[in-house]
Length: 240
Image 1 (cartoon, rainbow, N blue to C red):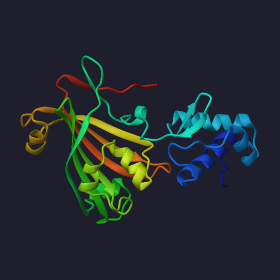
Image 2 (tube, rainbow, N blue to C red; image 1 turned 90 degrees about the vertical axis):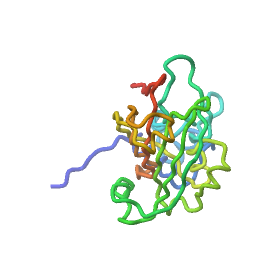
Image 3 (cartoon, rainbow, N blue to C red; image 1 turned 60 degrees about the vertical axis):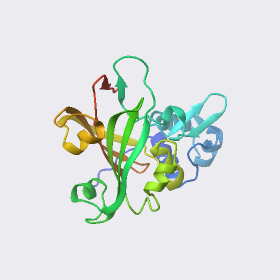
Image 4 (cartoon, rainbow, N blue to C red; image 1 turned 60 degrees about the horizontal axis):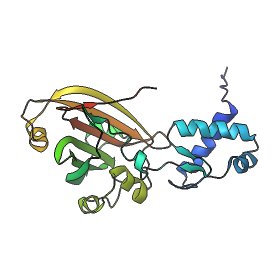
């Protein structure tokens, strides 16, 4: 006997809104139709639409702006640019880092990366390495893996010519917005190459954050390994 699962109506409307976002009906930074217009479109009450939008707002897909409407969230907004960056100073206010790209090349995906990105064995990927510097001090070394077909045209020259956040570039020029990220964090010892780029001693303790980021459909579109120097800094995460 087939078991039928019930999905509340507001979650069904959420799924239809996500389909619109994924399909590019509403682009990042743009306003979506009003609750009244969406209610008429989907044949449901305004309250049901409001509840669906509330869910998408808590998931950082939509942003409500008082008196202006509801907008598609964007990595280009100031408050969203470093939403996934968790390194904070032990004292004083956080400062925005500057990026320095040290490598960008295309290659066949290693097995572990192919599995994480749900690619076929040997499929092409883009591998990026960059430093994040805080007040000119390198504190983060990122190793970033992206599906090659999705990010055709992403080169070292294009990265170095762009002055905004990396996720903003991937969103604006390649139509890919990172929605969710899952991370594993553990302590490691700095290997020689990491020590050189982070200006620490080989063997010095670092935090390694291994991240998989997904877009609207839940498909993985980024694997990232970030090595963090925590002298005078700590990894911060707020649990709600």
